[in-house]
Image (cartoon, one colour):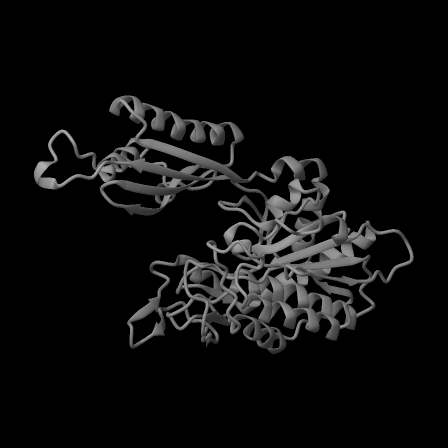
Amino acid sequence: MINKQHLIDRFVSYITVDTESDPESNATPSTEKQWDLANALAEELKTIGLEDVSIDENAYIMATLPSNVDHDVPTIGFISHFDTSPDFSGANVKPQFVENYDGKDIILNKELDIILSPDYFEDLLLYKGQTLITTDGTTLLGADDKAGITEIVTAMEYLVQHPEIKHGKIRVGFTPDEEIGRGAHKFDVDKFGAAWAYTMDGSEIGELEYENFNAAGAVVTVEGKIVHPGYAKGKMVNSMYIATEFINSLPRLETPEHTEGYQGFFHLTDINGEVDSTVLKYIIRDHDKEHFEARKDMMQKLTDELNTQYGRKVVSVEIKDQYFNMKEKVEPVMHIVDLAEEAMKQVGITPNIKAIRGGTDGSQLSYMGLPCPNIFAGGHNFHGRYEYVPVESMIKATEVICKIAELTAKQ
C-alpha cells in the first residue's frame, strides 16, 4: 500500500523548487535553477536504494533498480521531466490542499477572487471525495511533470522495500527542458539501455497514449517600408497590415480553440510588429502526416501569393520540424501498450487510450530508438493558475508502474 502522506510530502518538496525552463536560452538545462532539483533528485535516488545513479553535464539523470529474478526479462524504463512551463510562473509555489472534495467551487485566492470551479472545469467532478492539491492562484502547480517524478521515485522506493514483488531490471530517467521541446535532445538512449520505456506525463487518470501530433514551428517575417505619414502616399508599406492579411488567409476555424481529437491546427503564438517589420510565430500541429505536410505547404504558398500580390518579396517564412507522431514507431511493438493497459486494469483503472494533442519526450525518444508510450500522471489544467492534481490519481499511477514491472517479469 502506497503511503499517501509520504507521497504528498515528496510531491510538495519537488513543486516548491522553481524549475521553469527558458526557450530563449541555448544552454542545457536552459535555466541554472533546474540544477537545484536535478541534484537533489540524484541524491534521493541513491538514498532510496537505486544503483548506477548518474547525472551528466546537461542534468540528465539516470538510475537502475536491479532485477530480482533469475530469468531473462527485458529492461524497461520510466521517464519524466523536472522543468516546468515558461507559460506561467513556477516560482514560490504555495500548494493548497482540499480534503474530501465536495464538488463545489474551490477558492484559490480570496483576495484576487480566483476560483477553480466545476462549472468551467467539469473534470473536477470526477474527483468528489478525494484529496486535491491546487495552486494559490498566482503560480502554476508543477504537476506537469513533478507528479510523474513523484510517482516514479515512489514506485522505485516501494519495489526496493517489497522484494516479494518480482521484476526485471528497471531504468529511471529524468530530463530537463521538456516544456520547450528539448527534453530528449541530449538523452543518451544507448546509455539508458532499455528495450522500451514509458513517460509518466499524461493527465487524467487512465490515460494511455501512443499517438501524438506531428509538430513544426514557423516564423513569418513581413517587411514593410516606413516614411513620414504626412508624405506616405504611394511610398509607405505597413507590414502590420500585410501580416493581418497573412493571419486572416489561414483557415479561421483551424485553431486550437476550435479543434479537438485528431483535428490539427495553426496556432499564432506571438506577434511583434512595427510599420517596417512584423514577425509572427506559429506552431503547426496535425496527427496525420499528409495533412501535416499540407499545412506547411499552405503557409509557403500563402507567402508566395502575397509576394506576387505586392510585386516584391515582402513576406518570408521559415518552418522547422519539431517532432513526429510516435505511432509509427510504437505500432510494431504494440505489446508494450497492451502491457500498460493490462496493468491499469489489474489495479482497478479503466484505460482511456487516446491520442495526445501535444507531444512528450516519448515522441522524440521513439524516433531515437526507444519506443515510449505515455501514461497518466494525474494532473489537470497544466501550465496555469488552475492546475490541480488528485492525490488518489498519483497513488494509482504509482501502482501502475509497479504492476507494469511485475507483469513484464511474468511474460
